[in-house]
Image (cartoon, rainbow, N blue to C red; front, side, top):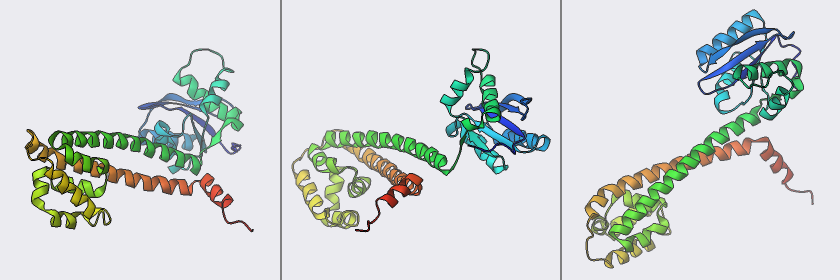
Length: 285
């Protein structure tokens, strides 16, 4: 349970995207502030500073610690205010104890503040674990967007290659997200350009990115090129589009690798992961 014995004013924030409703109550239950509050650092600092100057220690309590509630908590911590949050389900149960059925932001902000004052056992501390989860949720959400973008670009590449040279697509398609294949398509966007580059040049280009696969891939490429002697209408246009799409796909995949590395770092630092590592350590037997 959070110790509220040294708290001089309880500030409840019903958080919103553009603005919050802020209600502050004293230990005796008297309202010290009750207004809408823009979700900007200057306005948050102004309010916290005023309450600190007039009352002393300010406990800042929100109804959700991540997303739209992240900035108030960051500012509060920076100003030395203790922070906590009241879980949504708990707040809804407590709300039934208060008169009036209409749900408003002002009522919710007051319930958050008053619950912190009168029922501190309902509060939950915001620790590093919560921050880790919030960061993971943000990164995973962005990674989902990137995965969708990677699929869209890859499908466009599949479609273009199938249109201009089906045999070439059969070789490259299954490996389309491999760095070597993307490097090839970024440099040479048409069957004619690939053939003109020659096998030796392609081996030199691709070997650093696919040491074991390069010679086999180049051989399969030229076998596929020999299977089609005609030039399909649109091939010249595709030669301009394919390198651009390959570059875009490379950039998206590189971003996903960076995010995967950060996700791994966060998971390794998470207390539950550390407990699991301890439990799975070497036995005495």
